[in-house]
Image 1: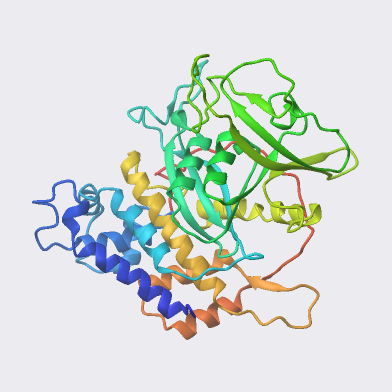
Image 2 (image 1 turned 90 degrees about the horizontal axis):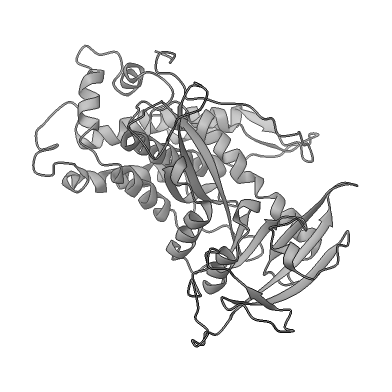
Length: 437
């Protein structure tokens, strides 16, 4: 199906209209909230929060209503916002994503990268799950953690969970997203070293899907460390493990004992000697290759050697960087780092609103064809500018041909093979006092 900017906007507005038909389902007081005619009805509130950037609340209202004398006040906006459960924006995110039914596959597979990212939010000691009190009198802070599945070919988020940093458990969140995925399309889950766990691999195996997970390189505590494998510069070995909770002496090198502290959902947490439990069989490949003269990388995968060689696995894992770039765009281009509240429930509204607008902008941008000319580099649309154009397209009556023409005016060269060391900086929440009016 050809998803033009006009069609994508129509789908998003239809999703908003469907939610607006039953505002009582997403209101804190269903019998009272949004029952009277006001300047800020439920539908208008959804649109305003969706279109928010990093401005002050007054600035956001001016963008939505223009400079009018009867424009709602910031106080009125906050009062109306307090009536809406965050579930409304979460539902809107999933409904919009599900309405885009196209699939872009890589060698017959849907590519889903998983990763997590911290979000610094304004200090609020009342939010105990995210509040961190530092020692030695240093300034405290609040931190939320976003876990996401990101479609690398379609360049959109498909599933997201948010939790306070104190309750962060990336593997648990990953398993929840795996089990919640109802798609029957063959899928490859691509993950970094933080997701190296038997339980994650088993859940993907049970779904009859594939995985590519970066592992620790023969270091203590990693999966590869406990395997009897040669430490060659290049390695491609198939492994079959039989996981058990029973600690026993035998000559079976494939039998792997899991202590009760190791989370594994397909075996009981403890096992008495007189109870017979069949070991769980887990099959995968261990692939090791050189990055530089002094560094190596190890991948664990259940993709077959016939379908994916070592070189193809290298390229496949390198594509995972797309989710890292998406987090950067989400936080700074779409201004998720500039939330408008200290309360977690309001912040959740903005998180799912920004995710929806990210998908909205990416879908429009990816369906605008950039004609490649005889130049040194291929070119792509500048996503930072595209977000601004798509936001105005959502808010105002800009015709789709104008949107496409504006997007094609702002292009960037694609310079492949360019790499820079990842910088380490300390970030803090953006203060409410220093916002664009």
